Length: 322
Ligand SMILES: Cc1cc2nc3c(=O)[nH]c(=O)nc-3n(C[C@H](O)[C@H](O)[C@H](O)COP(=O)(O)O)c2cc1C
Image 1 (cartoon, rainbow, N blue to C red):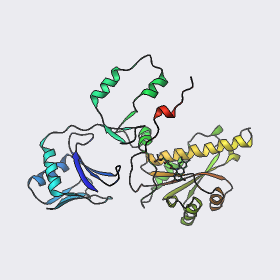
Image 2: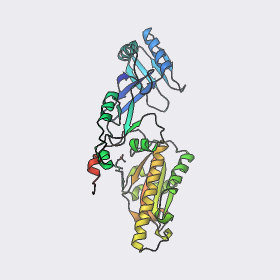
Image 3: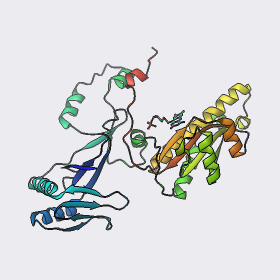
């Protein structure tokens, strides 16, 4: 990671953000300093002194050496910057007061997933509103919904906007309460006739997890900290329809339940990969069930948080039938 710049904090005029970037364009690391931390750093840099600034969590610190300044952060790789460069930029930055940057996360505009609000532009946008426009036209022509950065991490729209599949999990254990939340999300999903035509298998057995990797075309990330297999169970759907319709209902039940679990996992700070590519017969054998598996949801802490992928424009996604 290479030190890039110092910039204003998003929500406060005090403190700052110090940004590093890697080889990939979406690979960045940012250290956010509060008022005190920045002041201490400035003080040391002004004195041309080596020394340490302890950060708020009391286990992370910044170590200023004569050649390199090191950001030693708990649960994070070491970040470094050339002392001459960062000293110069921090002192320049501290000379003038800074306004906070207001940052939003858009539901459809994914990269960059955050951008800085231009208040003037927004005001201009409001005045051009056409009261005659139909609702659907307004939706199709509208700017992406803007979501405030200070929304709760569990805010549904924030989860939509920031979720991203992960194929590399870190080794940390997922707390039981989080697993409970993920499973209870599956339980509250809507189902055909409320018959809950699905079953969830929580696979803890390490050998079974390895066997699932094989069954899923050798996708190694299937051996994740938490593995859920969603299966259809049409026999639970007590509706008077043909077996074909009951199969369809239970497939939809299992799929929406898995989607609820996926969102719940994202809401509690975890990441997921949805696996659709697997040999159904092998998975049945591993689980010891006759139920048809519809998806495998692999969950854990992401090795690295990535910005969401882009999608088609909303106008292409929606076909209006008038
Ligand atoms: C029905 C379905 C099947 C999928 N199967 C696989 C799979 O077998 N292996 C995999 O690595 N990802 C799989 N994915 C994940 C997608 O590749 C991923 O969601 C997509 O690239 C969009 O990226 P995002 O989730 O980060 O937005 C699947 C997703 C869905 C919805």
